[in-house]
Image (cartoon, rainbow, N blue to C red; front, top):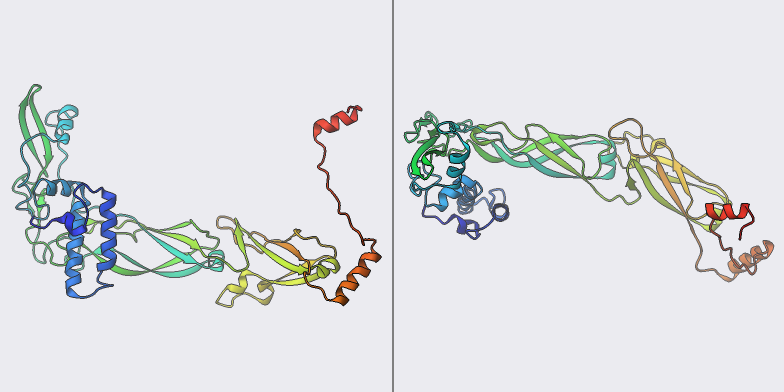
Length: 388
């Protein structure tokens, strides 16, 4: 091949598979036809995709590094000599003579799984929602229906390996006569070659396309949960069965509630007079965020009753008004923490009234109360027997 595939992706020749993948993803985002539809960019995108197809496949990359053309059936074996490779030595030592044949590998293989992330509001995650996802994956080529050949043509048996997908090599060594098997460099182990590849998919049997997939999100999901959609991932080479699509849930921030398991936590701030005298507060629930209007007025609000003398930090629990359980029945609770607000600015009249109240309660010069920690078991044991 005359094209430097490493230069096409902008990586060094000793780049790792992860570096090659990152370089391809970066270029694909810039050059994808949905982003840059002009013809020149599309040609560049095809060139980058072709380079990634070779360099991401260890077998194709080895063939390319040795001077062969992994994309051409006629010139694929040009760079291979007759010496031993590491695979040859392993086959020679650990495989019985004449029994290491593996046969041709199928062109049709299962596709890879795919992962997408779905951002949801807290109410959507709590009560479930149906969303439409736009995913960009490999799909079966509509022109050749996954065969990889031009319409009206078919694959032909490889003349080098005669359809076996591998070739044998016999050499003499200090061990005696060593017979080794290796994948056929002409057909790349398939046993067949595509003489006239499909013009749409270049013989791969699949192309990339954007699809819209409906996703039913069950009630009670949380950040990190994954929904598996079987057969909605990448279509495999040769029109093989598709992998699975995994949808990972990410739940956004809510202005009122913080989720803790199936419970919803929130804070209600009340003035000290309300905490002293008692009051009630109408708290909007998650049902109030449901857009379809299916919740009743009773479901949309919770009445939080704050008894007289409630202290700051006390928690009030509304049973069964939290998040529906993902695996099970029922719902969590709404846990409300009361925060008593002390006034910071008082006018003269308000200050006088508070002084009068303090005098009536004998609290003109309060000293506070120091809470002692409870005695331990050993201390109580000594006390029971008069110990010091």
